[in-house]
Image (cartoon, rainbow over all chains, first blue to last red; front, side):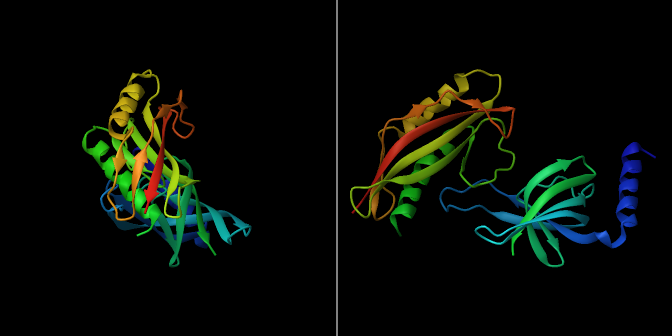
Length: 116
Length: 133
């Protein structure tokens, strides 16, 4: 077995061991064209990929709007890199990726936010 | 259509000319680019100044010029000159409300981009007046 597969299978095992702390999620990946200055818009297409996610921390702010910012750990070996264009869907709630904190090709730690 | 959209369309039309005549990509502010390369432009229209009447406004067109770190200032100067040829002193009218007139440009010394250390960012600034009638 290659080291890549060994690490990936152990990451999968770890996500299974935490049971319901790891929730089923969809990574909604955006693919877009360059900006069109004639129309002032851009064409975007979205692809949903299943992933396991563990919410690690939550910060709430209500200074101007009620915002929830969560730090999430996602198994991203299958889905590939995440960008701030992408979204995370958990239980039909859409979260926007606001900051990709760390990624090693197997797990991505990111901040997601939404107005509540 | 209001003065801000009219102004935006004027600026976009001249930016489209820059896109058509250059090898590098150009993006507006608040647009997340995918694969922009290491030589590209990002601009913001800031209509924050007073106009001569209620349908007019003045402001700045700020264009960040991104080039590779370590390659020296020549690329930036060439791009700024190319921008000058399209922008300085130009008068643009694409909408129904007014005309955008661009002034003379300035270019700052530049610095390594704080978000991407492989990029050098210089800021090209040109004032404009939008005259609405």
